Amino acid sequence: MDPIYKPLTELDKQKLEARGYKEWEYFGIPNYADPDSKTCKIKIYLYFIYQIIYIYLDHFCSLTVLLLSIIGRHQCRKHGHPVYGFNLNIAMIPVFYFFAFKKKHLEKSLDSVSRR
Image (cartoon, rainbow, N blue to C red; front, side):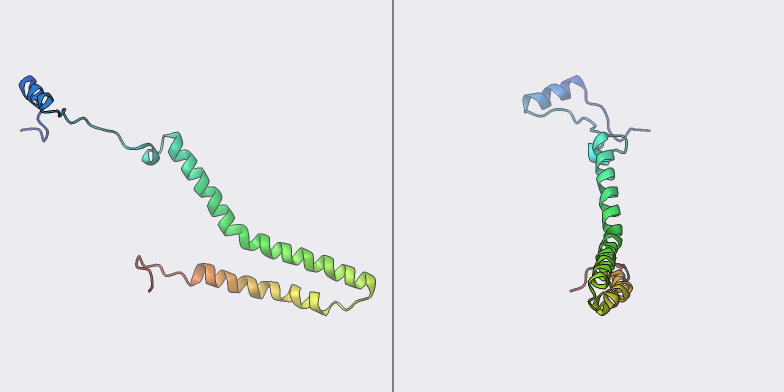
């Protein structure tokens, strides 16, 4: 059975070198695709950090708004001002959070073709 790639003879190698060519050499997989290389590990690590930020950004924003609303409500009570706006803001945080969740996760199309 003949191999797919037959090695060149010395005469064929000399003919190729005379014309400015060289014998084909096998090359390995690139560093970014090799799971054991540092380049690939750094790329995977950066993607993992990106995913964490992307997933938890909604939680951080909602938590920040909630904390500022609670602090503002406390300060209004302390100085005798009405707290209706802060109560409404605290009550609306879950509503806007679920709107953002729906837009971010549920309205994505899962097919490979983007919508026009």
